Length: 305
Image (tube, rainbow, N blue to C red; front, side, top):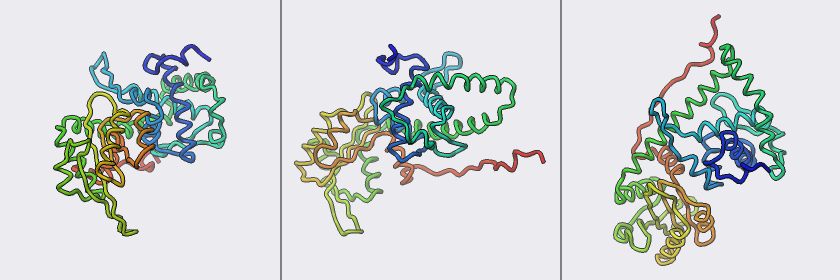
């Protein structure tokens, strides 16, 4: 065991941060059956570990140009590339990350992530030399993949930044509008009991497939500092029982601690919607957004023939 293995993620060296991400990436891929989009992997490893969740949200300002960026995205891409170099995953332009047979059968309990880091160094040196010679064609596809990820990340950041500026009242209305698109019909009671016992909305969801109607209550927390913790989930559980809800929906623009997620599974059913899931649902239901179509050139244009 290296000394760095016990160091907090944010305080580790560059290689230490990459090493910390490798095992969670492999775990979520194995749990998912072997393949996930990069954005899905990022979200799932953040759900596994509060340190990763905090690191993923940390914004750094460039000293040279003053640009903002997230170091996590770079270290994540390095970690995925290290797994590729070691024959544990495969991926190509705009495709999911896929576990190889070697990756699927890997025992994570005995895995030494530092061996993966060490084994990758030769590959990184070769890449560096090839880029200097300007004859590394695969680099173009890698840059395009990162460009697509950047576009997705920029939209996500702009959406979450806009939500963060909402007043608590507007965020409640926004959350009710989203749930309404998902099939929940709110009653006037939902407005009247706002801030009463942790309830920001009360309504009914009609499942037309099995003719079942369920009572739903929601809690909305627009947080710009700190995650939603276990006590808040427990308070919401008490409010759910008070209003005899069949299930609850807790919505935040931030994230939930691991303890909060555990608490949500132990009592009455609670669906947790964090910032990542909120972005995905806004896109899926096109809530207050306008889709924009764009185009990319096919491989046909790469040839000089």
